[in-house]
Image (cartoon, rainbow, N blue to C red; front, side, top):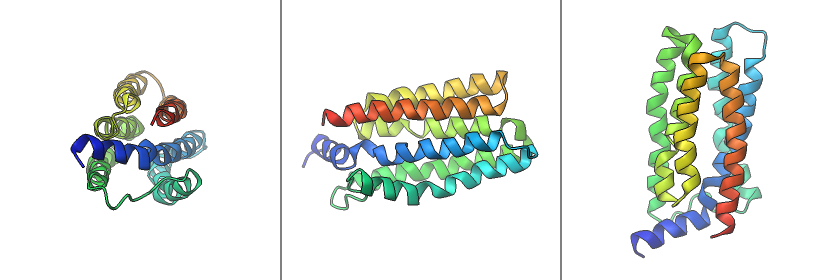
Length: 175
């Protein structure tokens, strides 16, 4: 298969990563809840990191429910998708720095990293939705993070992820 056929196969079999984006709705919902807890900022920020622990188990469950080929082992671009996802782990070090040095901005940085890591998937899945949300989430998170308290960022990303799921679902129907 040629490159474009591999990309189309990956997008079709993995439904453009819909299982991960649907899982991110749950995670950002949990993060939103943490922002309303009557806890010190450091504990709320720690809870944000803890919320991400459910990503892979929930994505696996979502893949089963949505009939998505979670691994697509015979498509070499699946390894690229994993690599693109794992790069976010390196960038999380910036959020960890903010946890200690700028705790009031940690969630903003976390949201910027999350949104920005979506951009390569726009190429992989030939997805306008990934491109739009990979730009909108970081920019709006930066503006909200400068002007408003962290719960505004969590609420925005939570709502954005719901809209993103709807957009991806529409893209998948066209496959």
